[in-house]
Amino acid sequence: MDGAKAEEVEQERAAFLKICRAFQGYAADAAEEVHRWERMFERLPPAHQSLLAHHRDKHVEAYRCVGRNDKFLSDMLATYMGDDVPPHLRVPPAEKTDGVTRALHRVAPVDVEKVRYVLKNLARDWSAEAAGEREQSHGPIIRELTARHPPPGPDRDVYPPRVLVPGAGLGRLVMEIARRGYQAEGNEFSYYMLLTSSYILNHASRANEWIIHPWVHSNCNHQSDADQLAAVHIPDVPACHAIVDGAAVGGSMSMCAGDFVECYGDDQNVGAWDAVCTCFFIDTAHNVVEYLQTIASCLRPGGTWINFGPLLYHWAEGAGYVGDGEELSVEMSLDDVCVVAESVGLRIETREMAEARYTSDARSMLQTVYNCALLVAVKVGDEGKGEGESKAKASP
Image (tube, rainbow, N blue to C red; front, top):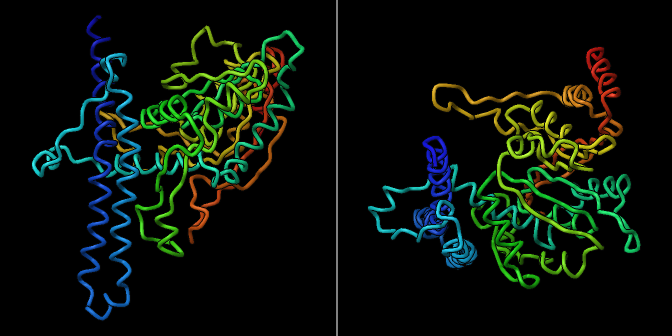
């Protein structure tokens, strides 16, 4: 291994260990928050404490909820500790959490929040309660896909269409596409998501195998304590059943780890895909133009890009600096996205708006609703691409 490659592996190992420590530190971080609630309660005058005496029971149950979440995360990490795991991606044993060690290896608040975000995403992707939320975003994508690229029937001796899902997260959309008879491949960059999706896709043996409590971490906007402490059972449908027993003929799924542009911007992916489906994804780019170029390159002529999501632009605020340079973040309007798509050979045929939630607690008093863009574009050939470029230049 040359020096550059060794340094790359070492950097990947360091980033991976940081994520492992965040998962392993979950219980202590969450318990600290519950302890804060207890301290605040004890500061109340006795008369006020008597009005809220049930909070003592709530705090005890909150610790139990944190313990159940930690049990799920710990069992997940344990599957990556064996000798069959590549050394640079092997999870080390958790460090002892005495006061000195914890002070030295305190998990950064941003990483604490990412672990809690994983728990919310588990509820979104893999619980029966979130079926309606998934339908808002996955439903339009799947309907467009099946209408434009129907999977072959059991009596047709042809390969199923190949469908790429960048930003696959915890893999539910990939599985739903595969079970309908497509060769589906998900791509994900975040190890938070990769570790968790691998566990739930490959290790769930029955429906509702695990219990998590994704809403326990905040006291705000709950109608009742029961809502905050609610148990969520996952997965509602194990992948092993959905793909093996319930999939249409030819359906299969796989996952690819890494940066989307780096993984799919090479020659072997040029014209290799019948469809690219993006859900709440394109605004994760530092440079959306680069994403759109890669999507267009991956599609065969006549292939389809189906997009659903907002334009939140994850790097727009608080990105800070990396090394000596500012973190790149290029934000553009939906009009601009469509113009750029046309310029790289993606002819926009559908542009609609639809409301959707994301990782929402249906019982919460606070609901964030995105007005999302459903874009459907067809990859044109060189002649059509030139026309698209001309249209793009002529657009205001």
